[in-house]
Length: 353
Image 1 (cartoon, rainbow, N blue to C red):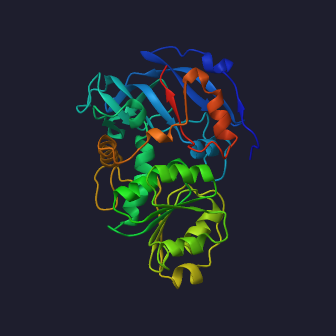
Image 2: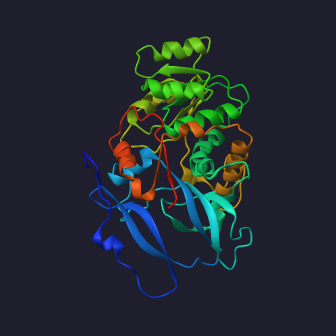
Image 3: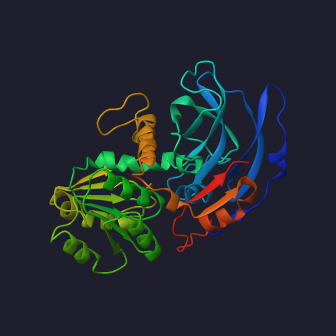
């Protein structure tokens, strides 16, 4: 594991031009095995039959995921150069011959990296409502990832929910749980500034995960009972154990954060005897073609998220802590890779070139 990150403006090989074929130029943020983040200038082909070429206007940095891949932490692959970024918005400039639902000039959001131009599969894009900005729409995949937890939990109106870990994904999951009718919604984190932000975004109660009386506080909120649904968003061994311990009998634990490290669980005491369910909610669980209860496609979830944004039922504006263009990315990754606790909102929007 690398202990520190490195950043450079670019590399000599990244500036080489490819030859042959009809291609378009772009810049893209990436990294290699040494953990160095750099700006790569490259060319891309014309869009394939089912692809859409998008000029990216805003791209959201997901600190936890990007830090894990740049530093090659546990449960990350070894594919290089890295594809950094996965949630962005922009304008359609070209479409493949089989694309019928998008045209040049359309405002779209979906699964795209930190690149000024990208050929995206049309099924991984949705239209942006007129009253939603590029910056807001760029949160689309963050919203879909968090929505996965709420769908897997099968939250019922009035059920109590605890969100453990109030980083980017946790803040979004908290809002979506509340929008789905959970009551009360409790946020748990060791960082005071993150708890304060969750409260500002509508969390019913907030608790300090570092205090020994956290369970006592949560039981007091629930009139002696623990939450029926616990959404674990950090993926870390300690919080996962805590999530299981803080779940009421017959409740559900949703593992939302990508796990890093091994977790020791006393299944007889904490799972079997309590009758709780532990449910994985990784984004890869999404079906590719058709939605059904608990399992929605990316596009159906993304369309739902766009409606929630348009209706003002989720707030992403408060989740932006820093803005920069592609050529001024150094400070962004200093914050992301050095894991500053006071970097509370843990999210940045990169504006297009």
